[in-house]
Picture 1 (cartoon, rainbow, N blue to C red):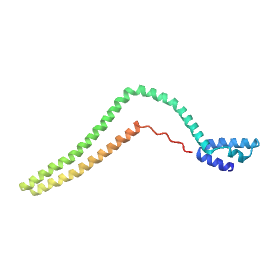
Picture 2: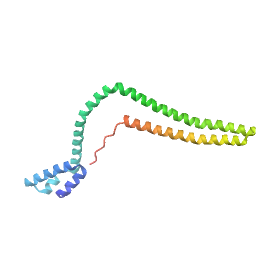
Picture 3: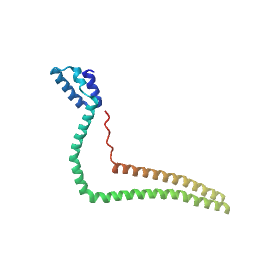
Length: 177
């Protein structure tokens, strides 16, 4: 394998900085009198990719340690504010979900009552008024029922997103070399 091929594969597996480092290393060894093919055969691409990704992870974790301290300090000082706000937010979401369930319930019960009233009006001799009550009942059943179902579904999705966003941890990516 030639130097260019090796560096191209290395850059695909790692990044430009690692490839530039090995390009400089190979050039220095060639200047020292070694053969290009011997130098390239002495390197293991997979091992280089694994080591460079571990070094990058270590560097990032060192940078993140500084911020973790500040995050802990800010979390401690903001706790008297964030806990009541979080509690109020969760209670508000639950109240909205209960409201959506109430809309679904009223969307089912109200049309039943209206339909029963319509049947009573038909029996009493007011057919046109009875049919109108039944039609209004079915219209309310469709409108409120659908609105309640969509509102409840949307609120459930919002609650799930918030729980995942605030209470889940990202999985570490596995390095494949």
